[in-house]
Image (cartoon, rainbow, N blue to C red; front, side):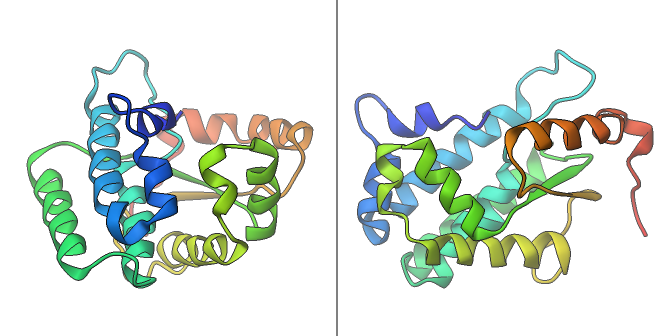
Length: 186
């Protein structure tokens, strides 16, 4: 799971909530902390043959930081600083991934799920924000433009109810959990 509880409480502060209220002021703060917590997940000792992560340091940079910058809610200097940190981490630490599983959903489905989840911080998120996030995921994982693909991508259509999603995920279990099925390169 992504460490949302950490993003909501950093020694009594809620950078996630602050960012949603004023992205220009708090975007760098949140994204710096997201980068740190995602780095912790990437580098913690491996205890199982496969490590599954809800999101990664790569999606934090290529999707959420990029969206803040493109939407004009992050100053260029903040974007450059986060990019420099991300590039340094990539050169000096192992943040590689073997497979990206893209649970592809429409922004409308995401919006409905977000409303059902009822996180206080997310009440202010408009559908337009989810459209922008969706476009960035498509650019990265489907068209392969602008951002490097760190691993093969398995696209799973995910506009289904929970029962159907469990069925679909079970059908893809071996493809997700068996390294020999991952295809690197063209």
